[in-house]
Length: 588
Image 1: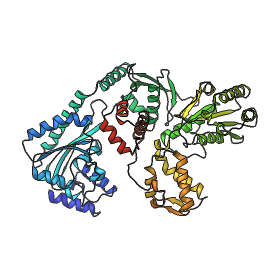
Image 2: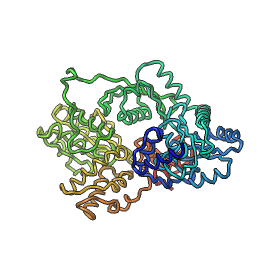
Image 3: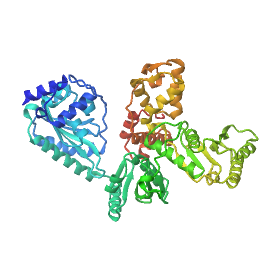
Image 4: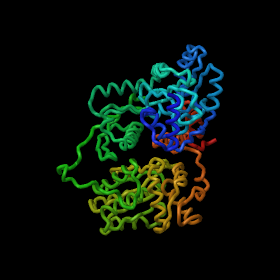
């Protein structure tokens, strides 16, 4: 059997056909993934973290379970291994010296990641990749360094959230492997899951109880959220598209943390319209709450077959990320409804571009004017009033109103109030805000004139749009020339945090065009120095949101990591790890 499997592996690596009876389908699928990742089959090269976080709830809960199992094994050549959800080895207990030395040689040790994308087919990484128990024997391993081993890996699911939080793996010599290895690994995973439930915080158990009570009382969609914990009932999982969930969670989190109790109507990227109602789990608890979702009918009296096609994306703007598309559609709807609008977001996210694009799509024949409140002259209010009352002006954007002095702000409110009455239905006005300024003025009187606020996401929250933004900007900068971006350069760009957002991306590409290349493919070495080093992996949307929360907490705590960790509900060890992982330049 071993010889047959070894021959099948060799045929696979030399691009020859492999008969299905010679290798299990799950193993063959993993070999194919390993090959797509361009992993070498003759060696193992994996990342290393010197101090894995043993303060994780998983590590603390699993420790007594693993030590008890290690004692029961009584010195047998079986290694007990615990990893986090990414495949990073946290703990390894091995009684046999020869096996321990061999595992050190193949880096199956704390600090190394045995994720499938680094180590190829193996019990840990393949179990995590497939989300189910997996045993890998001898030549089933993709890397030949592991062919003398047998391993049985089982993902560990959190008892409350149901998410995979890690894996338990039992590894022994191939010659000693038996069918009971996977059964023992499953039993150990169940014991760790029970320990996690016993050690769950009162906060998590309180959220779970509130979620179960809410789910029992209704057949509608129910979601519970708190920090890094999200619970969702079957109705929500069946109805909500994967593209809808990030926007929905963002809206719900803002409503709960802001103390908003009135329902909100939201159109999600998939086109689904829902009413969101939120309530905190308890009045004295910040951040956690229960979310009820009620789907709303599509506002159309036409039969389904005769409804008009979906409206096109706004002209002159690029991107298909869920959050970005949600903002585009919200601005378009506001323009069509004649609702005056506040566009809120960080500098450079494209607030003015969205307003201009909505006007171009809906009223291309009328002028679109922009007034910058930051560069106004003494007679600016009279000039603004003249523009507002000019019947030829169809849309007006006012920038930087958050920088106005109180007396000028009062003047602005006065002329806008007059224009709203005299040009009702014939003038659309939007204003842009940058939240989080050092001294934000009181804009209450101004905001009463604008019934709707749309948050424009920062570029780091829709990095998937880089693949469309980069060629779009290069086309503009090269004036239609044959200028592209190499895959390596695009990979470097995708790992930046882009604090200056889309505007910064444009300036980086403009610098390359001006100083390095105007035809062909831009190479990674031709990018500015601060974009040439890949020191961090690309973050998911939720990870970038977490990173932003840590940055804000550090700023609020004047760089005190202990205070920041406490305010976020995480340990000092965890915040140190995340500061390093996300590349945060913490204050000192």
